[in-house]
Length: 582
Image (cartoon, rainbow, N blue to C red; front, side, top):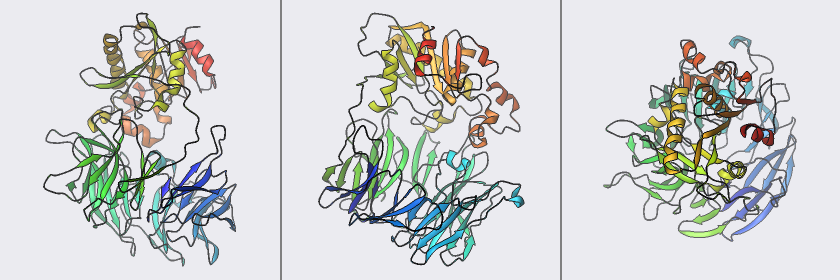
């Protein structure tokens, strides 16, 4: 979903109904609250200009330009197959990435035709090998949350592009083929975590050291490529930048996401030029944008975050002008749940409801089928660590009868399971109706509570994670006496699959059977940026990596490994039969 900066249009993708998996491009006219189909599908992704007057999307390598005002769609002739097309902020030219030369290159098509802006076929032999790519995010960047590799200047005359080979560099490219390099200590800070060039002023970038314990927020001079340190980020475990930051505020200040860990505070916060904008109790998950504040020349920040209950996500309006009352955040959503937002101009979209100021404009048409289940998990906070946990019973369960337990670990550490969102419990209700009390526990290492809660697992992931699962499970029995802890199964995928296997291997007294889909077997095989976040530098932590490796797990009779060479696949029914002990 995209809201134009002038607040006149909301563009979004939607299929024709619950049986149609193909999305089409639609637009809502905010003035009339009328929806219009602009481009029949398939449209898997799109990008717009600043005011959402023009959209671009790719289909089978061909570029299409959609006029969101008149509803017309035309194909744009390109010299090579395209992906990631994006109009410039004024809607004149369209940039795109091509693999026509064998490696990613960056091209621009516009009034002057289709031109190669940057590209280098072949390998980066000067940088110890590897394909050279322009305009794409490498695996390390994606793991750190950056999925883009190029950005238009606000006036549409230049592009800031990433060049990836053995290392990542940034370059300012003029459309007349001039360029300057962006200068920073790339050897010390090799990870480019975020790039933003949308809010006036020059580009803002965040770079991290390899071990992610120190980072810099840099302001880039768009004329020379020189950088100036605006803020430092540091943590002895790892730095976790806030999505949506850094960014320029309308008054010129720079908004930075950080953590407050002194004077009794343990918070994930926002700062503007060093001044705290958010209350310490608010756990900031993402900065969405800004919206006008009634009666004030300074806008509000629109922020997705959690205030107290980690199972919920609300949308907050955060005051950017600090008054006598200090930091202020107002919940704009009301009912508890898992809420999301998009903003542009004076328009705010909360979930699927479009608001202009205090006026409700419309709700976007929802053509999806009702969810198949109506789960009612019992949400709890257990142990002295107040671990978020939940118990989900079969639909027709009658209390007073012991029931086997299935502990779900989902995607493992770093991913929340205990959330107030019915859609998140659909698969787990299926497992519950198969005869289990499904238990989900967000142990330490999970976001949403506090930075210290999330990062205490550093270099001791397996010990902390298993201790929390065991302690919470025992504590839940006091509140849910029907849980049969004599019959406990566990399942997960990825890092969660690794933890499920570790649970059966290390704590067979508690976890009696387990299923692990695509588990991590050896952390040395994981991307370095992920492994070192949790286990530290692999060069001086051989004992830690060995302790976290799965050894001889494939031969364990109570453990089913799925997605490994010895057992590449298994259906859900086969997994269910194994967890039942059949």
